[in-house]
Length: 88
Image 1 (tube, helix red, strand yellow):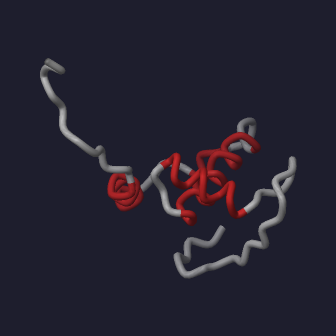
Image 2 (spheres, one colour):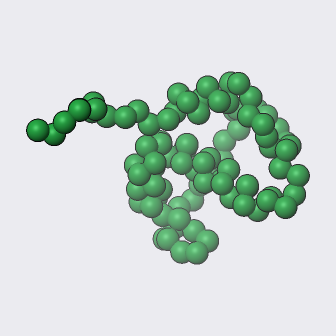
Image 3 (spheres, helix red, strand yellow):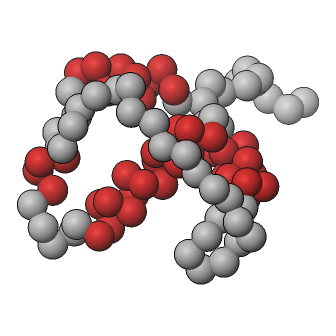
């Protein structure tokens, strides 16, 4: 498994089906998660990886490095607004 951060992949979107996803669906997912589209695709693939490899040795994919933890924390959606003690 390569660890290069400069790898890219072209995605060809199609209509939403069991095995394909539309660009509109990706945009909606990204908005709902508070991620950009790339983060959303990588998040979905990571979830699929964990589901598919559940019975295999997943330790080769884990644990996250300190840099990865920092990147996740930085990418986390920021809360909007402020907490108020009372509505009255």
